Length: 237
Length: 362
Image (cartoon, rainbow over all chains, first blue to last red; front, side, top):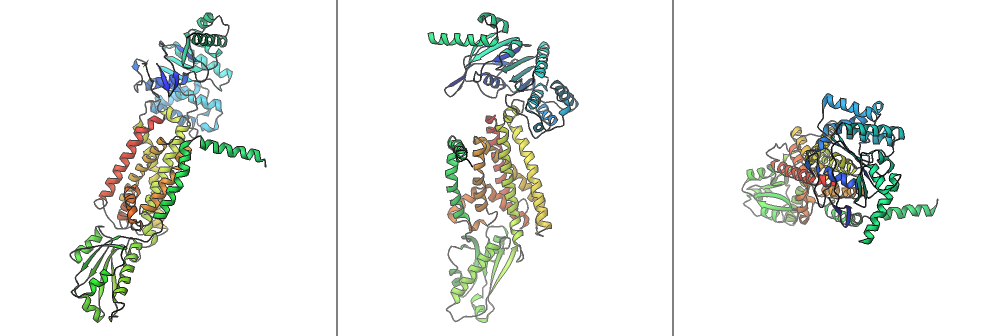
């Protein structure tokens, strides 16, 4: 797929296939096109060229949305509602109701360690906690596909480790997790990594394979090597 | 005080505005529009009031008085008889009707002459303008003649009475104003806020459809509007002892219909503006033209004729007219059917427009 904003190419002729049950990291600096890619998959913006399929449906498709969980980069929760009211709203919009919804809310809150704050206004929570509410809203429908835009920003290391454990756990259950991050090292924990730079894909492989190919010890070094390689190629062109 | 720091803030604010071309446009154009709106719409005397007349006078004096009515105040049209004069006021075709009897000239001589004026007492401004104009025509017509007999102008109140108070007269219009401004502004601000913090995008990443979003918001704000109108009705009835002759339920239903249209308008405005700065600047453009040209506070007759087409395209004109007719004249659904039809079309158009545009904001 390709996505143009005026003269800017946000996503440049990108091709990839992500099997079910994969924990995929979209890795790259700001402006790499990660968020645009996720927005296209959700049908929030249209691609300029190309074709994409999500959960067996061609994008954009409203039908897949009940099976997709999404956590945007910005906060996107109602500060003037309680944690529970927020989750109840998003649950109902996803088509859940009644006791199953209440049960899922409790489960999601336990997962993000916010059960005790259920009745509090989101505005009373710290920034990190507010992001956890947003994550709880994303995992609420027990989605087959979880699209997470920078889910670990502002989350303390201990909880971040728990999140990763959870992501691996649900991927192990056959659910697909696609998450963006610009923390290169964090991405080592993904099954697969798509390294993006200025809308182009630099690499799409397992973290170990990427490191091996670039002869780098860290993901940071691997990324820099790939960017240099790309620049060189462009210079030749 | 540090002048440099203060200037840094000044430059920051001016810089924000100049980076936003549409805001500059608003800042310069809105005052021009407002001064014109106030100049043309504010505090004028009623002109071109629709008035029916019957002159059955066998003598010359009746025609003389009618001919001496000050030009511009009324648009006169002749009707067949007393009954049709009365019904012209009753069905709202004319604001007043002047009836001069068969023996008017003769009765002048005996001092028993009467001019009957059918008036709609729910518009005191119009009543006094019409009776005042007749009074001055009488003085002009008879002033130099030898006849100096007592002459009675007998106002017959088709609606309202001589005791119709200012609050009676204003309350229906004020309710329509509240249903207009409160809901429009709330609707603009709610959507602008959801847009600016990314909530709109988050909502549309669920199966939520634009129509569901618009309908949901419209219903919540309609509840707010209904609550406001009920409070207004109670206050005007209990504290000001306003006397409403018509169906309060019908009046409320009209207000809610109108409020729903305004909620749609608010959503449309926040859809076509790019940020809260621009959105807020449109508020005076909604408020002032409607306040002055709609007939909600002053009858439409005070609007200069050349500007009356503006009154005719403002939704508040129809809401205010319907409220006035229902509460003060006691009209039912049939009487205000045209107003309701227009408000219905307005509401549907606004909601459809909001539905079409809202998703593009996500």
